[in-house]
Length: 363
Image (tube, rainbow, N blue to C red; front, side):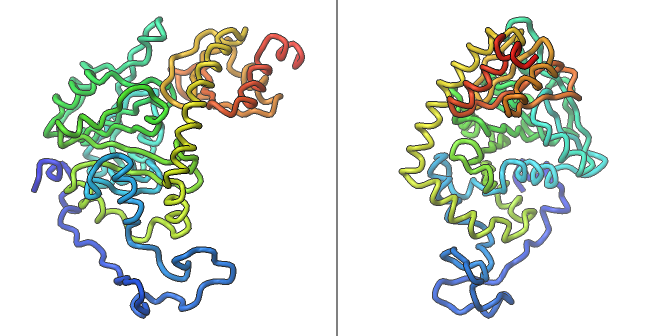
């Protein structure tokens, strides 16, 4: 058993996988208790009367090319959320093991750990008056506070909701310190919007690094829910036993393959470049708003701002029929608002709403 799988729940490593009925093109399937007829109006090529593939191998192959990894090192999941849940279920025994997170960060890490009965160890991001140094990893505390019970270290980069891409040297130090006792899970859901290189290089140096990617943002497929978990092949094989078969629906497979076609990816790249430019414009303009006291640098498709009055900012946006995100239960984000970068006209409407003229009109 590899070093990685020694960290997993041992009762799962020996669990025999479910073996679904075989599928072979051109053969009549009388081995899966399916309906022999397509439903009226079924637009799919495969047919919704037939189960989807146990694993969407066509997407696996295409994403392995997209991310330049072996197909055996990639597991397709329903968004990164399912990948997070899968890792916690596979590695954390209820009432014994723990995960480490660095708030403020993506709240689903905490939620899935709670559902599994795993302890959540929190090491808050460092704070600094300088926005360029604010919300960075507290490496010394992360290393000091983790233990043999800390099976998973979750790091979001670019981080949600702060937008910051994490320092590669700090991640390298964390990977070295927890090698042999923890997996380091780097959530790169927003990587395409960053000018940084990302962390695929860490996987060439460390077997215990896991990367999470998603098509929700970059190729505009949030409604389909397609993510990828990238790790060592033995990890992928193990998690494939924990993940039930047939989880990825037939229409979603066909839509994802269309979205990953060359022409579609070209359009997505063009839109990403536009969003980066709009992000810079939006951040600069928001800094001039009388309601905004700080705008943090962002490598994601959103910006985080500190306001003089979060409720007033939200109300001004709402009068313009715009919804923004607040975090009322997070003490680190008091009066902070996360704003997704929209189409230029959407951004213009928001800026008008929170400008001095827009506020005066609203009052």
